[in-house]
Image (tube, one colour):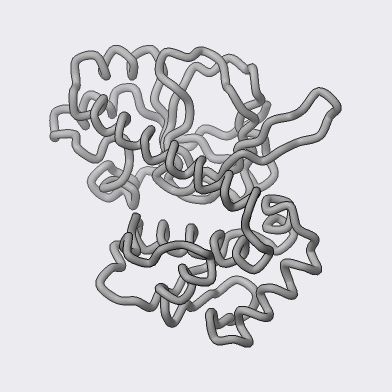
Length: 248
């Protein structure tokens, strides 16, 4: 596995774009100082493997920017995607030395990493970190259940709308864009990647995106810049309730 360790001189905890959502969200100033002593950054290029299932993991991390996938390889060589890692999502498990899934960068990603052993020790004496990690773990469980529903029961149109709504809501949360029902974001996934993740053909993805655009559910500038005029309508197209708020 190859990777680059980077130390962005301008990226301090107070300026971090995921600060309010990451595992350190509830930390006080002195706790952030302690995390700084075990923190470093890693960047991975699109398509690069972050870690293979079964690999020894000497770190845990938060995704600062970009998207990665969690996949499991079956005995016959087939690969099944089991989830997405979006900005502020947590990578690795305290108390677990080996990776449970393959993690692959879908786009260029930046991760804020913590050496695993010191992080585990800090968890034991820092309730703010342990409580936040528990909350994130429960959120991840909800996301996994949502992904199971998406792959197993939804139509192609609902799958596309669901993926768009997931990315839109996370982008809005990271950028503190609330209070309105219209959202604009840059889709970080190619249509080929969307097809792979959703178990659809490229033609089906393109056809459904065109249909959502034609029906006014989304507007596109180029292939990646997406505007959702009415988020509630997109959620309805995804087969989801719209009463849970935009920023979950």
